[in-house]
Length: 98
Image (cartoon, rainbow, N blue to C red; front, top):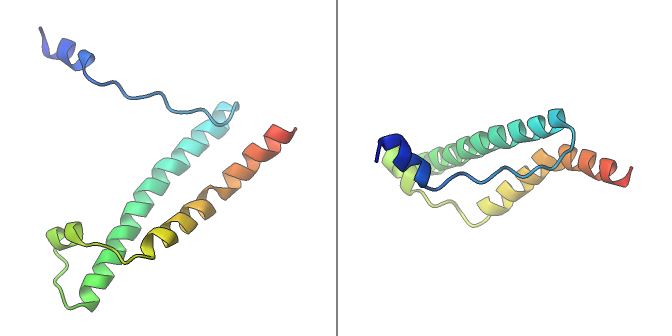
């Protein structure tokens, strides 16, 4: 068995869900999701950097990776994601009602 054959037998990525019938809107939605994921990760690292620095801990990569955010961080993140996606969700709702 060749390497390419063994790679084809492994787990395959699931098809991305389609939220918009317009390909341009669907592509825009996917781009927003990818950028949102990257920004969320950056926000989480920034939050860790600030908290570690305030606690007098040297913010090494290892310390940031081990950092556990405060309890309300998940709520803040969920609110941010909702604000990020709201414009696209409004478009989807308006197209469904048309």
